[in-house]
Image (tube, protein in one colour):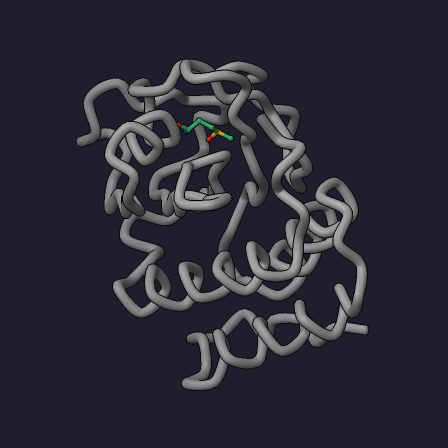
Length: 166
Ligand code: SME
């Protein structure tokens, strides 16, 4: 159903392949829990050097709550504006952190995490959650990863009923 990572440098087609696999996996399903759960599992099993991959979903204006993910158990609630996830929501923009030790207010759910990429998930223009990727390696995520995972999230938004999230 999916192609596992080779644990080498990501190939030039990594992100296009990942998006094609996600779209094939989702098919006509539009359920938010099912699609986010399968997206987290697909990313987890295909993306090298990642120690957490998943979603936080917005509840009301001010808080994110843990959603479908792969990796160690994580912090359940994050205030909008706090940590990398909450900052991405407040800025309505992706946040790529080379070294979490240099990010004031980073929330260390797992002390092994050293770099992070957070991409907002939107419904009708409003941020309703985030995709959060953590790595144990400093500088794991590149601008190409930011663009690739932003495109992946756009595909997920198009194919999922996100109106029920908040
Ligand atoms: N590090 C995140 C918190 C979520 S965990 O990494 C899964 C942050 O600062 O937002």
